[in-house]
Image 1 (cartoon, one colour):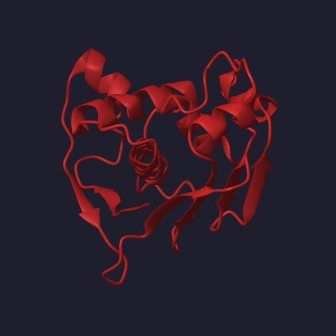
Image 2 (image 1 turned 135 degrees about the horizontal axis):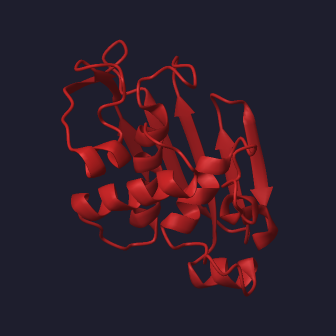
Length: 178
């Protein structure tokens, strides 16, 4: 399963008028446009089943990855700070938000993955865009991750529900926009 997405360019203010917390309490609007790089959507997420009962996460643009064989790896994203020092925080939080990993972290990961039909390999790349660029990378990567995870779990999700899951994901990570 592959999910790709363009980036977001804020044309209205550059001051974060699209921040959902502010918009929900004060109202407001934003003017954004989707942009591609050389005609390509620069955000790409690939999720596939693997026979091993583990979760492999690879972030190509951050040149990092992790193989997860138990729930311990998810404790940081469920902690008070939301795992902000974990370079794979977004991936792990998306697995919890997509309800593939239970928030209770009880049970056995191998057994849970066996019930899903095998492990997962999640690979993402944000081509040519630095983290913190202001182009909405975290939110766009988050929504691409959620969409691909719901699809591989064979659980349909509406666009409105996907947006609400993204908001919840960003709140889980203590992020105020993206």
